[in-house]
Length: 235
Image (tube, rainbow, N blue to C red; front, side, top):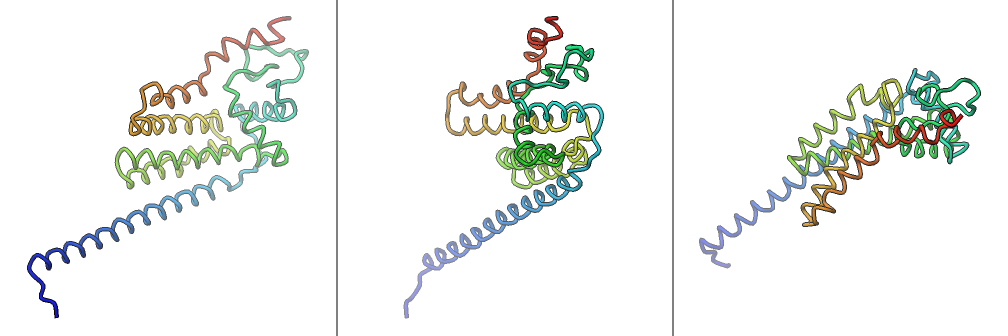
């Protein structure tokens, strides 16, 4: 039988504490994953509930539906009304022919999914739900990286379970799905900056997330150029 010394006894004790600590960390990580999965599952159920409701909200969603439908049929020409002979005005976003009043990236993505899934209101609102869920995940990672996993979970829950987010997904609030696209890219921006900083990238690359998100969502360029291409302004 082996005789253990005091030093050996202490070493075995420390090893046991380390294993218990490792189990506790693994359990904590598993609980965070389960919690985030539950938040996403509940949010998904709320977002998809009555997503295909035939009621179209005035004015934003009514205009967006028409623009997306026209983009699905003719991707090279974003139009609200197809004819300028009905008294349209390029300065009015709800009575226009060539529609450049908002950044078109969200509209092209939505038009593609709308056409791919059969051209229903459910398909039109689905991209908003997808980007709301993606934003929830990004918000969690921001909270986890900057503070803690619990903070990330709380922030993700506040965003995804917020009634206003649900209203945006269903097109019942001002702007609707373009704001959900905006929220996603703005959430990705600090994550890109943080990742670039940890990887010791130059500031030019580390700050690219901020510039990309801002550029995608900018509106001034569209407003300054719409009068140049509008058929009403050339008549």
